[in-house]
Amino acid sequence: MVLVIDEAHLLGVDQVEELRLLTSVEMDSNSPGTVLLVGQPTLRRRIKLGEFAALDQRIALRYSMTGMDPAETASYVAHHLRLAGRTDTLFSDDALGLIHQVSLGPPRAVNNLAVQALVAAFAPNSSSSNVSPPSSSARRATLGSDGEDVETVEGDVGAGPWRS
Image (cartoon, rainbow, N blue to C red):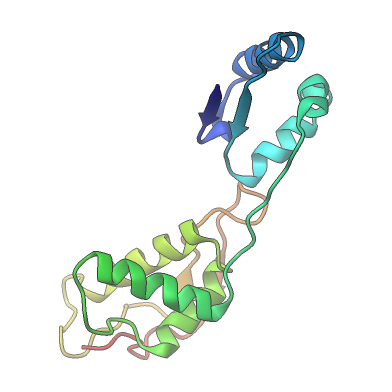
């Protein structure tokens, strides 16, 4: 049996305790199962807390996804645009560089920032031939590195990094 729990960082204390009990039972049986906890970086910190020490000791493998590099970010955005039916280049190289710089490369952050850029580009009072967001700072569209804070990163995004 394999049990996958996505967004595991949102689990409550009681739910984490139930997982610990489930893994205790499985360790004593002849047919052990596997539990995959998938979540944000806050999950790792929560499990390291003293109240979850018993569950922490049962974790056999840990994996943390690092952010993409600039080339991977550009390829990732291009792939998603193709999935959406776009065959042209929607973002300039400068825009993709800024998306990578501000997002730091995690896919969710890249997605959020690209969507914000598209919304800003096609917001009212924007010209489709000269698209640029109204402000000179890019609001970071993801949780901060600690998983809790939202930051503002300064950068000139008003120069029209999108292709018309």
